[in-house]
Image 1: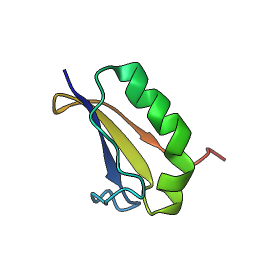
Image 2: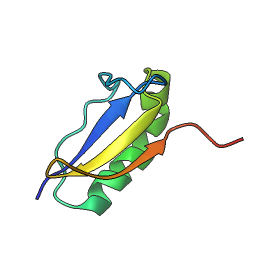
Image 3: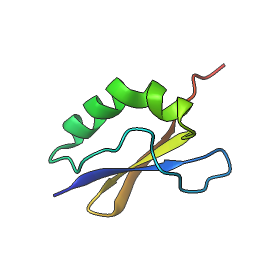
Length: 67
């Protein structure tokens, strides 16, 4: 199984990430990685991320802090 991230801008369009992710073997590894680099991704133009397992969407989340 491969866990991967997609990155979206505010308009919901795919964008290239400021930090290039790898394919992860576990959900925990993927989530740990996003926790380490989310600020760089946000600064690089990504507004939302989508976690996928073998191409199936698991969840989508904002990189912005909720007001």
